[in-house]
Amino acid sequence: MENAHDQRGADLAPEYNPLPPSLRRLLTAALYALLALVWLLDLESSQGLRSAGLDWIPPLLSGPAAAALLFLPDHWLSVARRAWAAAGGSLVLTTGLLLFGPDVGGSWGMLETVCLLVLLARTCRRAANPLPAVVLGAAVIAGPARMFSPSSLSFAFALTFAVGAAVALGSYLRILDGRRARAVAAVREGERLALARDLHDFVAHHVTGIVVQVNAARAVRETSPEQLEPILENIQRAGMETLDSMRRLVRVLRQAEGRAWQPGELIGELAALVSDFCDGEERNATLAVAARARAARLAPEVETSVHRLVQESLTNARRHAPGAPVAVRLGLTDGRLRVEVRNPRPAARPGAPVGGRGGFGMVGLRERVAAVDGTLEVGGTPDGGWRVVGGFPVLAMAGSAG
Image (cartoon, rainbow, N blue to C red; front, top):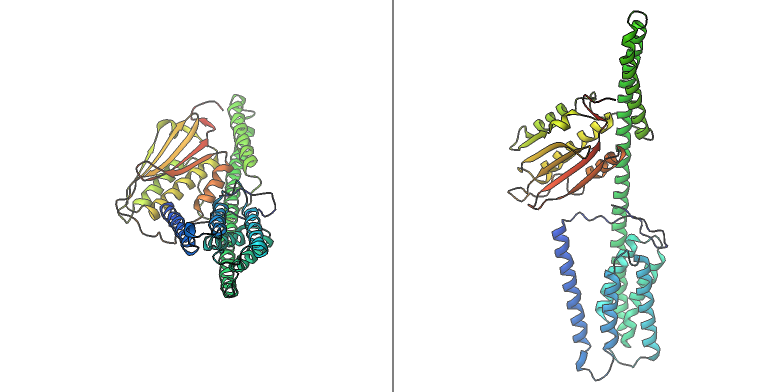
């Protein structure tokens, strides 16, 4: 969710649209149909090809040109530059018709005006510099002057309110985008804080073990020196794991939240999560752990990240796919732990989830997984279901050296 443009008029933040993809496609198709209808109305009002003159040409060409600028992809041309191009073209056309055009009506196109108003709202929403929005609004209001009629003043006055509405809509959406950007930043910061708490807990656990083993080494130094080597190896391994955790998480801070649990309890914790998911309602979930995955030794912060991935995925399945069975699988692929949480499409179409759509759980999850050198894939399945797949580094296999 987040590419920044380094040019003038860059987008401030990615747009957020909570509507489902199918509804967005339907609304886009409806917009295309509406613009086509407006263009046909332009054709009819100017008498189109039935006219002996050429006054129908400007509105029937300027409208599609404005529509092309409106739907041009952002990676081709930023919204601010498209606003400048649309406003400049519209003002040049208006000025040219006023100076050299025939004294006839029908030279003002509604399709051009509608596209410019939509582009104005997008510019107010996304452009960093307000100047292109100001010029674009002036171009919209000046458009009716091409009619060469006293009624053009009435149309220009009405368009003043339309411009104000477009500016208000774009500004409102800009505020919503800003709130979401701040919320996303807060979620990411929360994940950093949570990772730092894990750092404190697990480093304290390892350091305590190191201190205990050092005291044991002192105790057997004189009586059983042959036992020193295994103890020193354990101290070395614990120290290396502690340094590795600190290397990954030293830049984050943390606030305590939730109960603490010791390293090595991952499988039991996941079983508890699955059991809690099935309690009290008609929900079904299974946990399958491959033998090699059970034998994999993970860094403490990786264990907590796996736990968080399964927890967030089960929460999403409860909200968005009630009644659908959920399968949690742990395996080992290419030397990395593979964690997959999958559910098919629910039998009954779910209503709006509690709390609405567009939560920030996956934002925080991506932040956490990336912090431990993991990978995360989220998306739909061919059967209409959903899956979350995470890949995590493995320290060693149980029973192996080091």
